[in-house]
Length: 294
Length: 310
Figure (cartoon, rainbow over the protein chains, first blue to last red):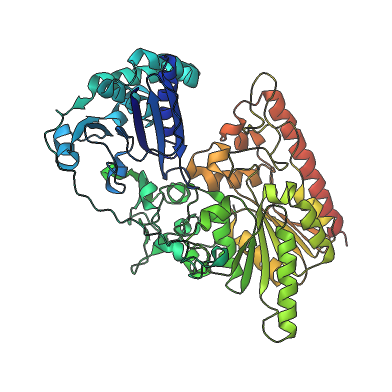
């Protein structure tokens, strides 16, 4: 029986989780292994949470085609997802959890320690320094290879070169830095899974749906949060605001509202942080502030 | 720039008939356009919508962003379904069970309008049903991953017309859908852009209040497919008008009016250089586009002047 390793990547649309999985799969094939790489996402768009999966087998064809529900390895590309999705769901005992975060291993440990190996790397900082853009997929690949040894670091070079062309060198550099900088906690210190509850949606069963998929509750999308897609948030400077309302006019979400004093504010439950309001504001009263610093 | 008449809140309908919580990309120009259209239409409408980005981002079971009756259709039969809804409304009105003032509005993307649904649309316009058809034109099949449509402009890179040794992006010119609508001799045809919100909302109201078919063509900037930063959506829409790439005009019973007529057109380069889909263009291609845009614009101005003579 050959060893089958299952990997789940958590990212956001446009962050490169799917590319990570592809490069990982190609690297394994490079080493003569068998591999699958495939994404899973709904019709959500840029910024929405997405999943990508890998299956890697040492010596046998992989017949399974379903989504990975009990991964050996979980990689989290976006620290913002930690609060909204249960990233450890189904993670096997003795598995590996790798998180991109600017927090120290100690801080992360208190929240995500469990019967698995925990590793933390500040991939965003590495990406900003090396690539000058906050796309962390290649850095996370480096960290993941270091912690798990699923493939060798050298095997990543060719698929990365093929995928990124001119930008390959920088991406390989980011990969190497993360490989060197990832901090790993000793495994198995805690056998308890962290208890977390998330405001998960309960879906109606098919018996409860009306024929034809009719929805009778008009505008019920209002209960759906899109605010967690945001990486920057608009902040209004009331000294510069002339209360003209252009921000309200041009918001694609329709989430800018006027408060009692006549100033405008975004409803962060919906705001996706596109930045149109800040760009269109005549008096430049709106600035986009990085979500982590707001 | 359009006179925004400071203090938007006094002029703008507050009610959102297109509810937030929809799943469009951040900075989506089409979601912005739909939101403005719904503000202008009010609640007494039935929306018939073709498959496309707007449909799947706004109606993911069990959620809906629509505050009005809304029905899903396929790419090819939006206008046909709208015709049927109009006929149903008329039958119910005769029986005293519905109001003839309830407007039927068909909405579709450029693929569903200019490619797949054009025969149904042509039929419905020709038969003269009392409905408004709105095309949200983001210049490719963005929903399925940026494939070219016949509304994709010359030179734009798409996933089916990529840039390489053989292809330099789209090799044909954008299909002139409003002109096709005008050729049906319908009472009202207009182009609009969410970057000129009050112009857009006035046109929607006009189309709604006209008896008979009306056609609106709205340019919707797509940050994902046009490869632009999400905060530039409104600015790029404005540049499309200022450069003459997408002039805003209306045709009422054959009479042309230019709504935004800049004293001097900006160079198309200002519009093209902001978009990743055009970044491969050579100076010759830009020159070609400039000439074509100027010629089309001159043609339009000529039509406007011709009708001014009467």
